[in-house]
Length: 242
View 1 (spheres, one colour):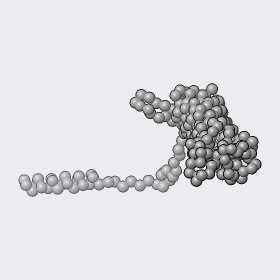
View 2: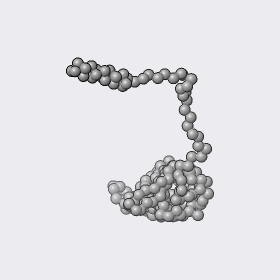
View 3: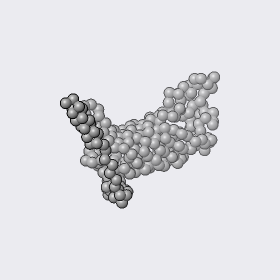
């Protein structure tokens, strides 16, 4: 009886081994897929159901600005802007700014002779930037949302711009190259806070090329040597879509 039991066990083991062996199946080469085809979309919608639609719309606004790299003169200005969006990406932008008159804190110190070993240097006797008008191409690279809290969401966009402008020194104008980037934070689909940061490159009179004292009259631009300026202009204001 014991021998019969052992024999049955061996038969079951052999049967299970045969059953568990993987069967090798071969297919003809012509039946195998040689390429894959992906669906083609004629129109790819990057953003659906936009809360802020800018295509074919005008944008206008104004605000305050600051020259971050002018050592002698009052850096603050008032600015206006007007833009037209051809679509959600491409547009043109016109901007102008008028600087406040006067000297910076450092300019006032120089006029009072501080740090000059008994001499004076009055930058107000030299021509300096009064206003600027700029025309730019604007490229909107990003549109999305930012979460302010669990229940508060704000739309935003990021853009780059570049173009030419004309900067006035009072008695002469100079061509200015400008380029930069900015952001818009939308309170509503029609109202946004706009922040721009631009680099300005232009030629103009160098006030340090002449000795200037407080009793001098204001000199003309032609009396000074010219230099190339690289300055950074930051503007902040409200804009409206119409």
